[in-house]
Length: 444
Image (cartoon, rainbow, N blue to C red; front, top):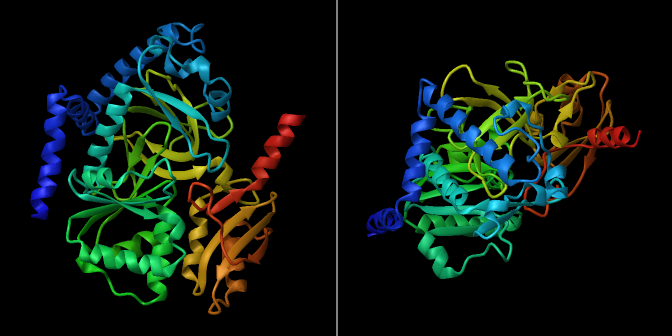
């Protein structure tokens, strides 16, 4: 009976789409053809066409781009940041969409001031097709029950009938510090025999893993979970291994944002690399301090052009995230995706070290949570939430000095909790040194 309802949801979705003229199916087929083109010929030709059409449209229909040539190369257009988009939002909005239906998307503002982006109807359909395609690459299919782990604000909570129809099981991230809540949730999914997949914040999966470790829980083999997708934050090796161990499901990391959609994702065959969504976005990785392309294997700023949002064209938008791109073959990949530049940690020589450095704490017994903060070029604070079992302060400082520099001044601060942001996410690293330097440069 459960399989019948799964198939009913699957075929019901595509039948409704067919009646409407198959807009989702056409976008889905386009995405699949482009991303899976191993030669790269279709990627290059289609991206060139989409870029040409978008730039021409933006020049004709927006105030921001009106002084550029309709045949301008994308590399000659300015790189945008969130401040420009927030302060000059109206200048990016299409005049041609003035009397057409658009949709407002507001970023969470978890690491800065939120801003608003407008999307047209076709962009919404493209996003839906992106989600379906990339979810399939991570073992999730339409019709499965979706465990959705996030902060459920009032505007996001769906009526019960809609949640049932969409087959969504909401899980509240703000309740995870309560072991009883996790225990009850596990009992629920054990009783629910339906096929399930899971999507949620990476840091929330870590909380669940550490709770199950703390009670010596056995693997939960009968939950029928096909995949686990981490979003919003980087998945540590520890979290991946433990979630796979407890729920007997492969764990994938997805790189996406509110203002655009799915940019890249790990898949069944990609290992730790992220397959880039070359069908819907043109992605560049630029140097940290200039708008020149980053060198091969060099960590740089991830800059994207959204090929399908005509309500508010976002061309060369600096996401604030860092990554390494591999364009040597197809599908194109991001071999590294890190959090925002304000979360990047530098060693005492001024070199960026991976934000995954915080994962070191997972190797020490008695650590519940950790957060690394860079205060100055040489000063770091490591916040630890611990149990009585922890007795490795000297060892952990010694290990961090290997990454940060022997001249690094590392102070440990013991706390009862690493607080979550308003979005429900938890920052593993913070760089106050960058913020101070930027402010000083702006006021000179």
